[in-house]
Amino acid sequence: MTTPLTPQAVNDAPPPPPLHANVQRIVAAVFGISPDDVAGNADLVKDLGATSLESIELVMAIEEAFDIEISDSDAAKVGTVDDLERLIRARKAGTASANNH
Figure (cartoon, rainbow, N blue to C red):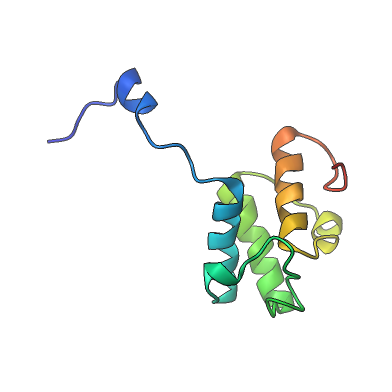
């Protein structure tokens, strides 16, 4: 027997994981590494070993997970996990560039 979805049940739902935890999980899954290896300042290529194909897959996974669109030019500017998180926040806020800190 399932509990009906009431406003109270919705309010009692756990909050979504923080952005970094979501990004860690997605990066780890795409790159086949441990989420513990996904630090904010980690360079996607140098530190995490991303290939060009994995980078494309990562952008697609992020777009789907966060319901955003990332242009090729903005994706090319992402070097670190922190850059990726700034881009996601910018897209969710509706701004045009990840460089708007």
